[in-house]
Image (tube, rainbow, N blue to C red; front, side, top):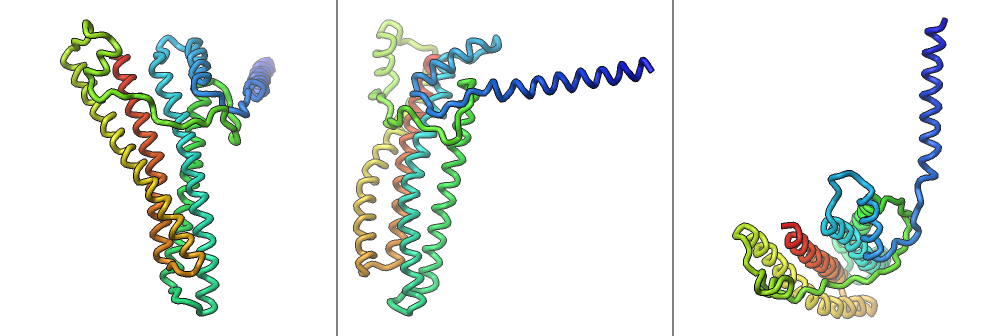
Length: 273
């Protein structure tokens, strides 16, 4: 009898402990409706990390991780806006092509109509992917900031621009960062930094080229959409233009992200070694 009471009492204590922990968890979660600026996020992440374990992340690593998540959100938001624009053009073209096909007007083929529908489906898939990436980046920030972030969060600062990094060589960077008297590096560290600088220059070149292509593609889209609306453009030409426009403009923001990432990796490499 006493043994059964002890077992029962143990179970009741366990249930009480579980109910208490479950009750406390929702109250703990402070959900941010607006994501602070990057610098504020870094400050908060540093405060959270300072209260953690002994193997805490360094300041440079925290800044890097916050920057990666923050920039990914900004980039994906821009890419969603582009894809929404393309979605509208595809939907309008599909509706017009279906009407022409059913009424036997023009030279709309089943193949041309199918391509437009596939283009629309691909655009919707892109939007889904971008939204998922934002959700993943938001969760990364929740981990770093130690606070919940509302899935429908707004951003206090939506500025998205390439990092200021005019240096082309490691020697230029060392001259600015350390001074000529401290510019001698051990061979292994020098090689690692040289390789990192090569990646920065590669990413910069790709970003500059993407910027030039972006301007030309915007003009092409305006022309082809106007031609199609006036009935002097074909479904084939519009389809190809929308695909090119998507690839180039989405690629532009990918190039921007990769350049910023390359600079951040170089700076992290420099500080950590």
